[in-house]
Image 1 (spheres, rainbow, N blue to C red):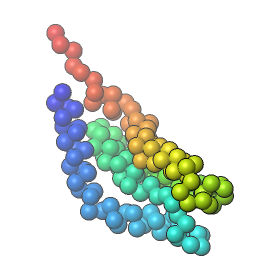
Image 2 (cartoon, rainbow, N blue to C red):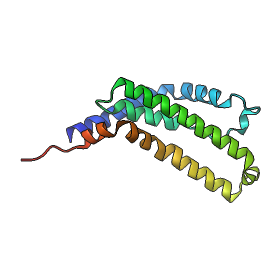
Image 3 (cartoon, rainbow, N blue to C red):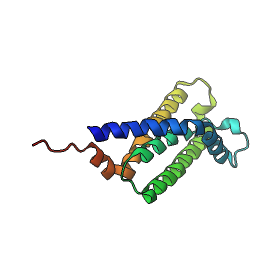
Image 4 (cartoon, rainbow, N blue to C red):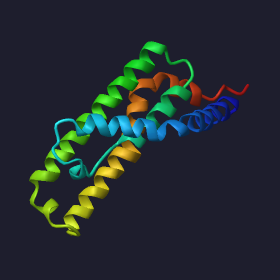
Length: 143
């Protein structure tokens, strides 16, 4: 139980430490995402804040090697940029996206946010640090 509380405390600490960097990171992420797009206003999606949630989780997880952390963070950034670029392309091609206020547009936007902001950071974290998370959550045997 003590390990879980320590882990949650580290999540809080890293969240507070990364809070001032949110605007800076979003600016860089938007800049990379806008490369090659004529009008930046056509970008409806950006997963920069969701990546920060993944950063916090991976940094707070004990016993993850530096190599594994760096590879996970780099991979997550590339995956989020790829998904966001795909969504920018689809947003310009799909017919429902041209009609503001359409029910399909709202539905797919919510599905995107649910996946990118709530599910994907945790899935990536578990993919990178499954053994370490399992070790943190393992309860000692009571004799």
